Image (cartoon, rainbow, N blue to C red):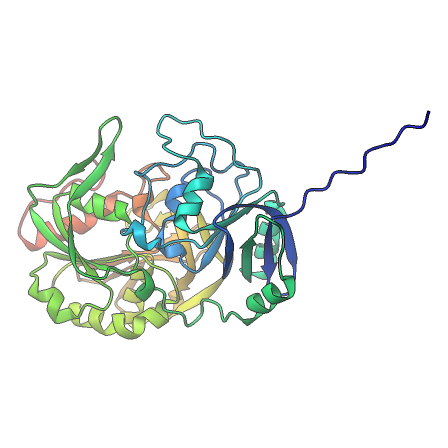
Length: 401
C-alpha cells in the first residue's frame, strides 16, 4: 500500500520590514498591527529593552536588538523612560531574532507582546538580526517600513513606495513631537532595590530642565541630589526660564536632527549663556549646546546605540562604560576657541563631551543616567550640582560617592 508524505509545512509571514531600496525581510509579527515608517538602527545592549523602547530619543526609529533573546523577563510599570506614557513617545518599531517567551522575572507585570500592543509599537521576530546589523554597518541606517498583519496580507508595492518616499531624519524636528505640553514639577528620586522610588520633599536647589524628550531617570538623579526640578516645554523662552530663578539649567536628550530643533532652541540657549547660571546638557542637549557655542553637528553612518561604549573623560583620565543613543554627533573640528573637548568615544574617536572654558557650562553625548557601568557616569550629575554649590559658596560634593 502506497504511503503519502505530508507536504513541507510553511509558515506564512505576518510581519515585514521593507527597506527604501526595495529589500523585503519577512518575519513573525507581534505588538501593534499596522505599519510605521522610520529609520532602522541597531542596539547592542543585553538588557534594558523596556527603557530603550520608551526613550523619546528613539522617536522616528525602528530598533533592531542584536541580543537574540528579548522580552523574556517581561515588562513592568517602573522601567519606562518617557515622561508622559499616554503620549507613547519612543521607538515606533522593534525587531527581534527569537520569539518572545512567557516572562520569567520577579518584577514582571506583563508580557512584552501585550505591552507592545498598548504602546502602539509594531514588532517582528524570527529574522537574522546579525545580517541586518551587518547591512546597517556597511550601508548606514536605512529608511524602512515595518508592517504587521495577522492574516499575512500585505500590499508590498505600496510599502516599498512608502519606504522610498520618506525623507528621513535629516532636517526633522522631532523634539516638538515628544516634549511636555506644559510645565511641571518633578520630585521622584532613584529606585532602591526592594523599596521602589522615593520622593524629594526637602529640595536644596532649583533646576529647570528644558524637555526636548527627557528621560525619567535623568530627572530622578537630579532630584536625588537635592533638586526641585521644573520641567518646561522645548519652546519655552529664556525670559520665562530665568523668571523661575533657577540655580541650574538642564538641556535634555531628545530625537531628531539637532539643527532642526536648534532653530528655536539655540537662540534660547545663547540667551541663557549670557548669565552665570550653571548649564548641563545630555545627548540632544549636548548637540544643541555645541551649536549655540558655534559648533556644527553631522549625521552619523550607523550611529551609536548600546550599553557597552567606552568613553574617556579627559578631565580625569578615566574610562567609563556608557549607554549611547544618537544618530547625530558634534563635529569636534568645528568647536571654536574657548570650547574644550572633555569626552571622546574610544570606539571611533567621535566627540562625547564639551565644556566652556572658565564658565559653569558643560555637556555630554552619552547617557550617564542609564547605568550600564553600572554607575560609571553618575559623577556628571554631581559635577553639575557642584557648579551650583560653588556659585552659592557651598562645599563641593565628592564626584564619586
